Length: 284
Image 1 (cartoon, rainbow, N blue to C red):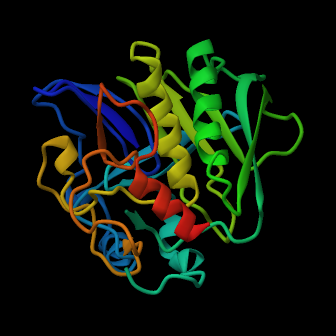
Image 2 (cartoon, rainbow, N blue to C red):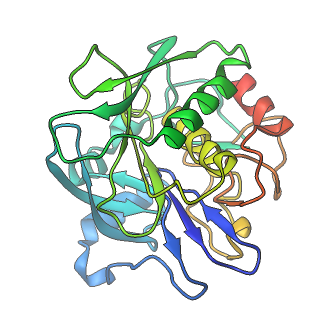
């Protein structure tokens, strides 16, 4: 998820289910009191190597317009109760067994990932703006220029047009501005990226949001998950190990120019740095 904070060095906060929302210097995400979340859920999150101390109840709008209830973990990971309790669907799918950072989930069952930017449909979601569409094109180009073993095909249309793997849609019912994406599941890319109220920011920043969120859909975690230093915080989003696996050849410490930082400066150029490229080439 991405949220936008108005701090001394204005930054955009990214997160894994991904959304961007404007906040003032002293505002933070509301967290549900622990007694409102069952002990079973919190225990299972710990088993999944997710931070059970940073969790709140939340919801998202699905492609058909219905609302799905669940939990927002580590500020940007959305999971339903069923997904949390059946945590084996996030089991490691081989590959890296040690050591930017990835989740246990990677795209293993398809080489071409079809992205649909939603610009019309029967539901209340407004179409992606022209700036959002341009930024999404730029983000897809960022990935395809790396000539990875996976590639992306982008088109624009409605919810029920030809089949696609990831829908990118605008939903302005949320406060502030941001983006929310999904992790891969069962070997396939995360299915949705939701964005809202991004037009107030420079094109390169919107490109950063889109590129970042796509990164989550193919299994990348925040580069600074261990500290959220880019957000001027000192918070660990979750334990290391299978939940945050270090990708060999990339720094273990703070990488201030990574596209996958939890927060990004408004001066961001929207491009991968060399460590981002190393990570993606290693994985794909």
